[in-house]
Length: 254
Image (cartoon, rainbow, N blue to C red):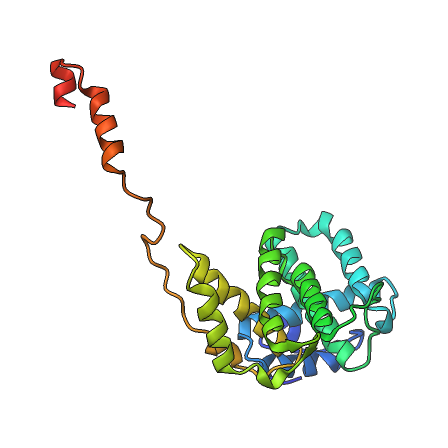
Protein backbone atom coordinates (compact mmCIF):
# COMPACT_ATOMS: atom_id res chain seq x y z
CA UNK A 1 0.00 0.00 0.00
CA UNK A 2 1.01 3.64 -0.40
CA UNK A 3 3.58 4.70 2.16
CA UNK A 4 2.02 8.12 2.62
CA UNK A 5 -1.37 6.58 3.35
CA UNK A 6 -0.31 4.33 6.20
CA UNK A 7 2.10 5.69 8.79
CA UNK A 8 0.64 3.93 11.81
CA UNK A 9 2.11 0.46 12.54
CA UNK A 10 -1.36 -1.09 12.65
CA UNK A 11 -2.20 -0.04 9.09
CA UNK A 12 1.17 -0.01 7.30
CA UNK A 13 1.34 -3.59 6.08
CA UNK A 14 -1.69 -5.40 4.63
CA UNK A 15 -2.33 -8.82 6.12
CA UNK A 16 -3.13 -11.85 4.00
CA UNK A 17 -6.18 -12.57 6.18
CA UNK A 18 -7.59 -9.06 5.70
CA UNK A 19 -10.94 -9.51 3.87
CA UNK A 20 -10.82 -6.00 2.43
CA UNK A 21 -7.42 -6.46 0.80
CA UNK A 22 -6.61 -3.86 -1.87
CA UNK A 23 -9.91 -2.05 -1.22
CA UNK A 24 -8.25 -0.27 1.69
CA UNK A 25 -5.71 1.28 -0.64
CA UNK A 26 -8.40 2.58 -2.98
CA UNK A 27 -10.32 3.84 0.07
CA UNK A 28 -7.20 5.72 1.20
CA UNK A 29 -6.85 7.27 -2.24
CA UNK A 30 -10.51 8.32 -2.25
CA UNK A 31 -10.19 9.92 1.18
CA UNK A 32 -7.08 11.83 0.14
CA UNK A 33 -8.84 13.03 -3.01
CA UNK A 34 -11.65 14.35 -0.81
CA UNK A 35 -9.08 16.29 1.26
CA UNK A 36 -9.60 14.42 4.53
CA UNK A 37 -7.01 15.13 7.20
CA UNK A 38 -4.23 12.59 7.64
CA UNK A 39 -5.42 11.81 11.17
CA UNK A 40 -8.94 11.06 9.90
CA UNK A 41 -7.54 8.89 7.13
CA UNK A 42 -5.45 6.87 9.59
CA UNK A 43 -8.43 6.42 11.93
CA UNK A 44 -10.68 5.18 9.11
CA UNK A 45 -8.11 2.67 7.89
CA UNK A 46 -7.30 1.43 11.39
CA UNK A 47 -10.97 0.84 12.19
CA UNK A 48 -11.49 -0.83 8.82
CA UNK A 49 -8.67 -3.24 9.57
CA UNK A 50 -10.12 -3.97 13.02
CA UNK A 51 -13.57 -4.59 11.54
CA UNK A 52 -12.04 -6.85 8.90
CA UNK A 53 -10.29 -8.87 11.59
CA UNK A 54 -13.59 -9.30 13.42
CA UNK A 55 -15.34 -10.46 10.22
CA UNK A 56 -12.59 -13.00 9.61
CA UNK A 57 -12.79 -14.27 13.18
CA UNK A 58 -16.55 -14.69 12.84
CA UNK A 59 -16.21 -16.37 9.40
CA UNK A 60 -18.35 -13.77 7.64
CA UNK A 61 -17.68 -13.45 3.88
CA UNK A 62 -16.91 -10.02 2.45
CA UNK A 63 -20.16 -9.73 0.48
CA UNK A 64 -22.17 -10.05 3.73
CA UNK A 65 -20.57 -6.90 5.12
CA UNK A 66 -23.33 -4.51 6.26
CA UNK A 67 -24.46 -2.02 8.88
CA UNK A 68 -26.12 -4.90 10.74
CA UNK A 69 -22.77 -6.67 11.14
CA UNK A 70 -21.22 -3.38 12.23
CA UNK A 71 -23.76 -3.06 15.04
CA UNK A 72 -23.19 -6.70 15.96
CA UNK A 73 -19.44 -6.16 16.16
CA UNK A 74 -19.88 -3.09 18.35
CA UNK A 75 -22.12 -5.06 20.69
CA UNK A 76 -19.58 -7.88 20.93
CA UNK A 77 -16.60 -5.55 21.40
CA UNK A 78 -18.26 -3.26 23.94
CA UNK A 79 -17.61 -5.36 27.09
CA UNK A 80 -13.87 -5.67 26.37
CA UNK A 81 -13.13 -2.35 24.67
CA UNK A 82 -15.43 -0.14 26.79
CA UNK A 83 -16.61 1.86 23.82
CA UNK A 84 -17.33 5.41 24.86
CA UNK A 85 -19.72 7.53 22.84
CA UNK A 86 -17.06 9.40 20.85
CA UNK A 87 -15.11 6.20 20.21
CA UNK A 88 -18.26 4.48 18.99
CA UNK A 89 -19.00 7.42 16.71
CA UNK A 90 -15.52 7.24 15.16
CA UNK A 91 -15.85 3.50 14.51
CA UNK A 92 -19.33 3.92 13.01
CA UNK A 93 -18.23 6.78 10.76
CA UNK A 94 -15.20 4.84 9.52
CA UNK A 95 -17.06 1.62 8.72
CA UNK A 96 -20.01 3.43 7.15
CA UNK A 97 -17.63 5.22 4.80
CA UNK A 98 -15.94 1.89 4.06
CA UNK A 99 -19.31 0.36 3.18
CA UNK A 100 -20.12 3.27 0.87
CA UNK A 101 -16.78 2.75 -0.86
CA UNK A 102 -17.32 -1.00 -1.24
CA UNK A 103 -20.83 -0.47 -2.59
CA UNK A 104 -19.62 1.98 -5.22
CA UNK A 105 -17.10 -0.68 -6.24
CA UNK A 106 -19.87 -3.29 -6.50
CA UNK A 107 -18.32 -5.48 -3.82
CA UNK A 108 -21.09 -5.18 -1.22
CA UNK A 109 -24.83 -5.18 -1.87
CA UNK A 110 -26.75 -1.95 -1.19
CA UNK A 111 -28.71 -1.74 2.07
CA UNK A 112 -32.31 -2.95 1.93
CA UNK A 113 -34.86 -0.23 1.32
CA UNK A 114 -38.32 -0.90 2.71
CA UNK A 115 -39.95 2.13 1.15
CA UNK A 116 -38.15 3.81 -1.71
CA UNK A 117 -38.82 7.59 -1.87
CA UNK A 118 -40.60 8.60 -5.05
CA UNK A 119 -38.80 11.74 -6.18
CA UNK A 120 -35.10 12.44 -6.62
CA UNK A 121 -35.22 15.08 -3.89
CA UNK A 122 -36.85 12.65 -1.46
CA UNK A 123 -34.24 10.02 -2.28
CA UNK A 124 -31.35 12.37 -1.53
CA UNK A 125 -32.96 13.62 1.66
CA UNK A 126 -33.57 10.04 2.83
CA UNK A 127 -29.95 9.17 2.05
CA UNK A 128 -28.71 12.24 3.89
CA UNK A 129 -30.94 11.46 6.87
CA UNK A 130 -29.52 7.94 7.08
CA UNK A 131 -26.01 9.39 6.83
CA UNK A 132 -26.72 11.75 9.75
CA UNK A 133 -28.20 8.93 11.84
CA UNK A 134 -25.58 6.26 11.29
CA UNK A 135 -22.37 8.19 10.66
CA UNK A 136 -22.21 11.39 12.62
CA UNK A 137 -23.96 10.25 15.79
CA UNK A 138 -25.65 13.64 16.22
CA UNK A 139 -28.40 14.38 18.70
CA UNK A 140 -31.92 13.91 17.28
CA UNK A 141 -32.66 17.65 17.49
CA UNK A 142 -29.47 18.47 15.56
CA UNK A 143 -30.26 15.87 12.89
CA UNK A 144 -33.71 17.39 12.43
CA UNK A 145 -32.25 20.87 12.03
CA UNK A 146 -29.68 19.70 9.48
CA UNK A 147 -32.35 17.87 7.49
CA UNK A 148 -34.62 20.92 7.65
CA UNK A 149 -32.03 23.17 5.99
CA UNK A 150 -31.11 20.49 3.45
CA UNK A 151 -34.78 20.19 2.50
CA UNK A 152 -35.13 23.95 2.07
CA UNK A 153 -32.02 24.13 -0.08
CA UNK A 154 -33.09 21.33 -2.42
CA UNK A 155 -36.60 22.72 -2.70
CA UNK A 156 -35.19 25.96 -4.11
CA UNK A 157 -33.33 24.02 -6.82
CA UNK A 158 -35.86 21.34 -7.76
CA UNK A 159 -38.76 21.15 -10.17
CA UNK A 160 -41.50 18.63 -9.42
CA UNK A 161 -39.08 16.65 -7.29
CA UNK A 162 -36.30 16.46 -9.90
CA UNK A 163 -32.96 18.10 -9.22
CA UNK A 164 -31.14 20.50 -11.49
CA UNK A 165 -27.64 19.99 -10.09
CA UNK A 166 -26.05 22.47 -12.46
CA UNK A 167 -28.05 25.19 -10.69
CA UNK A 168 -26.31 24.44 -7.38
CA UNK A 169 -23.58 27.04 -7.90
CA UNK A 170 -21.52 29.05 -5.43
CA UNK A 171 -23.67 32.14 -6.06
CA UNK A 172 -26.89 30.23 -5.37
CA UNK A 173 -25.48 28.77 -2.17
CA UNK A 174 -24.32 32.18 -0.92
CA UNK A 175 -27.71 33.73 -1.75
CA UNK A 176 -29.58 30.94 0.05
CA UNK A 177 -27.48 31.14 3.22
CA UNK A 178 -27.62 34.93 3.37
CA UNK A 179 -31.39 35.04 2.77
CA UNK A 180 -32.07 32.39 5.40
CA UNK A 181 -29.59 33.60 8.00
CA UNK A 182 -30.36 37.35 7.90
CA UNK A 183 -33.64 37.30 9.89
CA UNK A 184 -32.32 34.87 12.50
CA UNK A 185 -31.07 36.13 15.87
CA UNK A 186 -28.25 35.08 18.18
CA UNK A 187 -26.53 31.93 16.95
CA UNK A 188 -29.29 31.19 14.42
CA UNK A 189 -27.42 32.62 11.39
CA UNK A 190 -24.40 30.47 12.18
CA UNK A 191 -26.62 27.39 12.36
CA UNK A 192 -27.80 27.91 8.78
CA UNK A 193 -24.24 28.03 7.44
CA UNK A 194 -23.16 24.99 9.48
CA UNK A 195 -26.09 22.85 8.34
CA UNK A 196 -25.73 23.76 4.66
CA UNK A 197 -21.97 23.17 4.77
CA UNK A 198 -22.57 19.71 6.26
CA UNK A 199 -25.04 18.82 3.51
CA UNK A 200 -22.73 20.02 0.73
CA UNK A 201 -19.87 17.94 2.14
CA UNK A 202 -22.18 14.93 2.11
CA UNK A 203 -22.93 15.55 -1.58
CA UNK A 204 -19.21 15.80 -2.28
CA UNK A 205 -18.59 12.45 -0.56
CA UNK A 206 -21.39 10.99 -2.67
CA UNK A 207 -19.61 12.37 -5.77
CA UNK A 208 -22.67 14.44 -6.63
CA UNK A 209 -20.83 17.78 -6.33
CA UNK A 210 -17.23 18.81 -6.97
CA UNK A 211 -14.98 19.13 -3.93
CA UNK A 212 -14.58 22.63 -2.51
CA UNK A 213 -18.07 23.95 -3.23
CA UNK A 214 -18.74 24.07 0.52
CA UNK A 215 -16.01 26.73 0.78
CA UNK A 216 -18.37 29.16 -0.94
CA UNK A 217 -20.51 29.42 2.20
CA UNK A 218 -19.86 32.82 3.78
CA UNK A 219 -18.63 33.02 7.35
CA UNK A 220 -21.38 34.21 9.66
CA UNK A 221 -20.16 36.32 12.55
CA UNK A 222 -21.09 35.37 16.07
CA UNK A 223 -21.72 38.64 17.86
CA UNK A 224 -20.97 38.14 21.54
CA UNK A 225 -23.90 40.32 22.65
CA UNK A 226 -26.32 39.54 19.83
CA UNK A 227 -28.98 38.14 22.15
CA UNK A 228 -28.97 40.70 25.01
CA UNK A 229 -32.36 41.17 26.68
CA UNK A 230 -34.47 44.23 25.99
CA UNK A 231 -33.91 47.18 28.41
CA UNK A 232 -36.45 48.03 31.09
CA UNK A 233 -39.06 50.60 30.16
CA UNK A 234 -39.52 53.81 32.16
CA UNK A 235 -42.67 52.34 33.69
CA UNK A 236 -40.78 49.24 34.89
CA UNK A 237 -38.02 51.37 36.41
CA UNK A 238 -40.50 53.62 38.27
CA UNK A 239 -42.32 50.58 39.65
CA UNK A 240 -39.05 49.12 41.00
CA UNK A 241 -38.06 52.46 42.60
CA UNK A 242 -41.46 52.75 44.30
CA UNK A 243 -40.93 49.36 45.93
CA UNK A 244 -38.08 50.81 47.97
CA UNK A 245 -39.56 54.28 48.53
CA UNK A 246 -40.86 53.49 52.02
CA UNK A 247 -39.58 56.69 53.65
CA UNK A 248 -36.89 54.94 55.68
CA UNK A 249 -33.14 55.63 55.52
CA UNK A 250 -32.55 52.09 54.24
CA UNK A 251 -35.03 52.58 51.41
CA UNK A 252 -33.47 55.92 50.52
CA UNK A 253 -30.01 54.38 50.24
CA UNK A 254 -31.35 51.58 48.03
